[in-house]
Image (cartoon, rainbow, N blue to C red; front, side, top):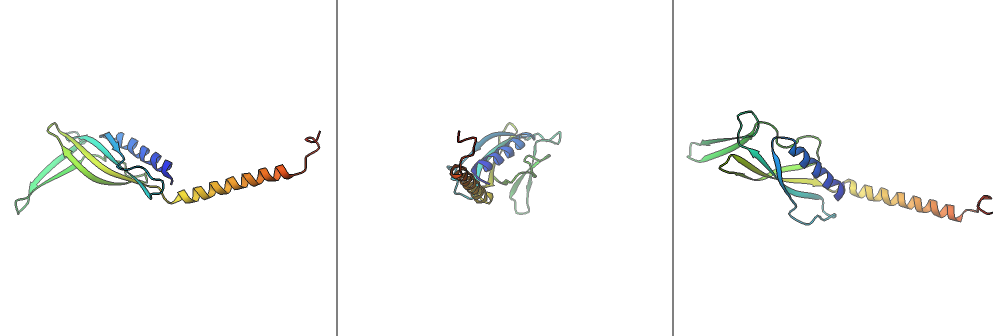
Length: 149
């Protein structure tokens, strides 16, 4: 897919993220989008409630292991990102929990831009060449009786 298609795919993914329990609070492109690159990557920040009483939101669990280390684990009651229907690779990049019970998760979302881009360009070039050849054939053909008047 080309850059435009990758941007549409990312936008569709972000919209699907907003249909869940979280709110997308930021989408940032770390770099300029280069059409020659193999993928488009953006940081997507989701904000979720840490109130898991109704099954939604995020619960925070903590434990201390045998060596005295403290471990925190965040678990959402429902899916916070779409898992099907999107050609997007998602990796958690950062998480913050504030005192008011809000969890902000930054996800690194990557959409491929390679693959069909070359095939699309080749197909478009071939179609343009065919149209050009067709126009040239029409221009060089003898005039029909109706056009010679």
